[in-house]
Length: 67
Image (cartoon, rainbow, N blue to C red; front, side, top):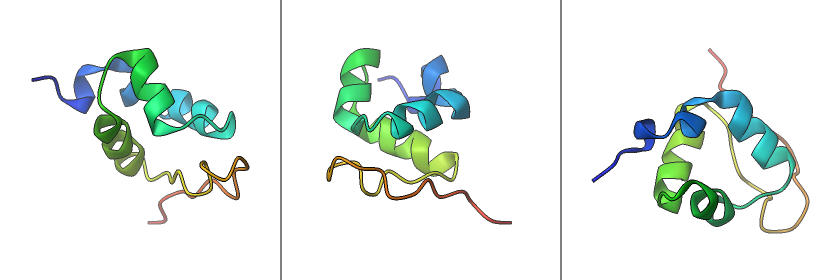
């Protein structure tokens, strides 16, 4: 079983920020990388980002962890 940190793309905050800003869903990112969508959610949460608003077709905001 591979973990989210086994995928170099998920370790890259920049990659995830770009994917979120392009309105790509966790399922789309996971399909491209060959991992589960839960791995994508875990990586997003680890980097302090949020995927809220992705399903609606428009990213409302890109949240960053404070502190």
